[in-house]
Length: 270
Image 1 (cartoon, rainbow, N blue to C red):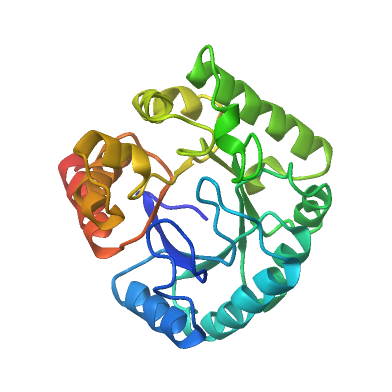
Image 2: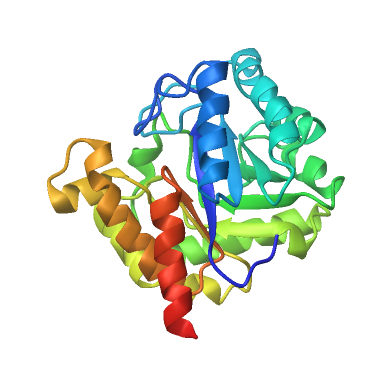
């Protein structure tokens, strides 16, 4: 998916326990209504997830994840035909395959293929699918124990490069790949800021970059904001910064304020 401006990927968590909006869109009707709202505000991509990846979260079963996301994607495939792309946020190849069958054209895998050895083959066999490869060092339950780096920018860059090499050897096409530095995943607040300040270094890998910083804890640490919703203005500032840097996409909890920020950046560029 190409665009001359930074894209907005709207988060649709069909979960009871996600850190910022767990439970708000958990039932089918609430999820569909939220998706309609995002579409009306100009969302580019709707990212549907059925398993929380907040720090410390327990995994859910494949059956539970499937029951949460596939009906929603199936319904949205009928609603989101005009310029809106559907994405499945999952680490399971079986869920990704079902979501592709239901209408998703992006697989957003926080493990970058490390959690499920079948994922690379699935993506390789679907060359029209884009694959978001995030930097990952383990499942949410214990990932913060792996937040140890000598040079976080160099190590994240090298580990993402390793994933690209492994995936392309498995048949994934380079043009399918989008990279994500994994803000908040096995990272301290200082690590997150260092990665954002050096986002141009990740651009050197030569792939589109997606960043998911919206309302995350490191913004709360900066602002002394314990409630996730109170971090929205800071999230918009991050989007503005990333849009100026030419980042491919931002993954956000709200849509219109981020579209507006990107529009201002684009107008200033003219």
